[in-house]
Amino acid sequence: SLNEVIALLVRQSRTLEGEIASMIDDDPLWACLNQAFRSIKGVANRTVARLMAELPEIGRISNKAIAKLAGLAPIANDSGKRSGHRPVRGGRSGPRAILFLVGAIAARHNPHLAAFQQRLQSQGKPKMVIRIALARKLLVILNAKARDARREFEHAT
Image (cartoon, rainbow, N blue to C red; front, top):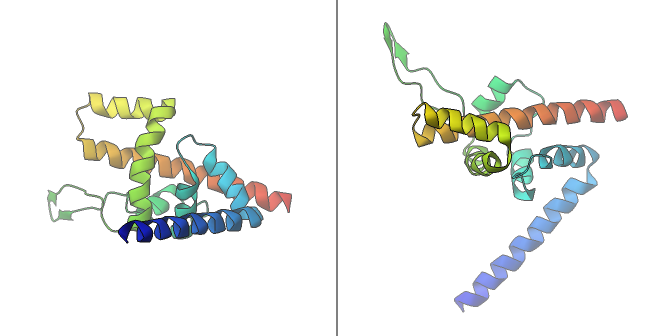
């Protein structure tokens, strides 16, 4: 009976993925954003759907602001004369989690991200710091692509 439940859930998941893909294709702006995001190797349908659903501000605000929304910006931990470690925290966990995964995948295919990752590794940075930096750099790239796609879409209409 568990196999039947799993099969049902898989069918429902595929149905939902198809509906989401058709919604993205039906909206001209979303289709333009989808094409812009998918130009980066490693960014797939699920990534695009999650980013558009959970970060609708992408392409409309600055790189620093979008990084803070996604929880990929260092937050100051200072008090008086003490300057503490600046961890990333807060923000939206969904986009942050998917950007961690996609950042590592994109670094395998994008020479600029791979060089960035190699430079951080050679400096002896911890693995988590490298993952956060890759995710943030990928988000900045996606934000720029979204900004350009939105401008192109506005001029086309």
